[in-house]
Length: 130
Image (cartoon, rainbow, N blue to C red; front, side, top):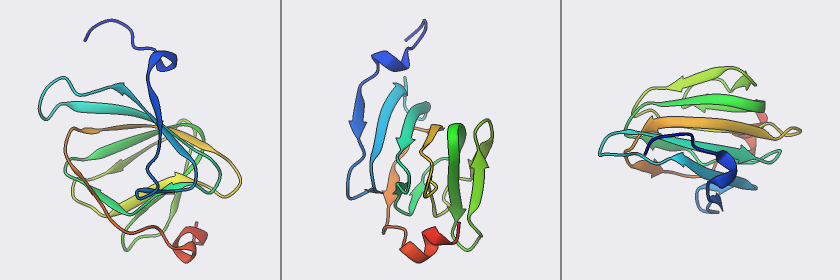
């Protein structure tokens, strides 16, 4: 694929209830062009919405476009990432991310095209730690 890619022209789908808590929408901005290539997803979270705990086969970078994104790696504190900031998850680490309780969040997820191993939902206690 070459040329500009327009978010408005991408297909947006609702986040699966078995992978997310709350209302989440995802759009493939540029699907990977070959095995192991980088994938780009535009993800929007309503207030309180978040991923389940999960692990990526390859590293993942989040660029927060709007709002505040809560992120947490297993065993570490919840971090708030502001619009205009990036956060890096190394490959193979258990983590979650999503919106805070009062503001929506939009981020661009950039990661290698590998399997995501989805785990259990983030508990209310874990989320409230943010």
